[in-house]
Every structure is written in structure tokens, then in C-alpha cells.
Length: 85
Image 1: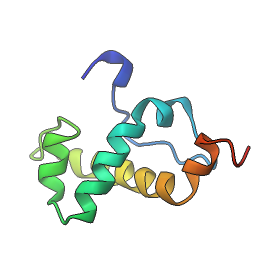
Image 2: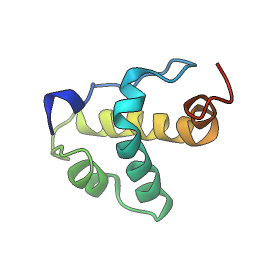
Image 3: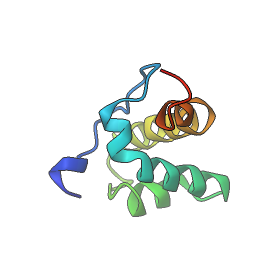
Image 4: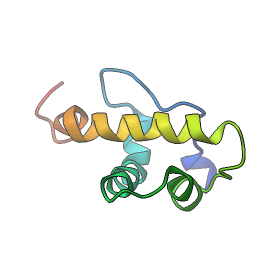
């Protein structure tokens, strides 16, 4: 993963789409799709986030990014296409 796409320990929780969200929108969609088909969190963390599931911080990183992905699908996308400020 390049330094431009470096993962934060916690995805943003702002009510507005952030630059981080814009940079990571493809990653969010991959996480959302993986969860939708029932992928194990360990597999998604390893394959999508390039994190070691054995690391004690990995679950929290995965969970916060999946939560943000879900927000992007339910609300954030409207801001990305200019429907909301």
C-alpha cells in the first residue's frame, strides 16, 4: 500500500465525506462487497487491507473501515455525486 493510501487506525466518522474517504472509496466498496457475500473479517483484513489478522489492532481497523464503507453506501455517496453539501 502506498503512503498516499496509508490506513488510519480508525476510519473517519465525520458527517461529511473527507479526503481520506475519497482516497479510500474503492477500498470501502471492496470491504462492503466482502461483508455482503459473508467473507470472514480475517480474510478481508488480510486481502483488502493488507493487515495481519493476528495483530490485536487489526479487528478494530477492519471494523471502523467497514462501518465507514456502510456509511458511504447509505449516505456518503450522495455527497460524492453532489446531491448534498
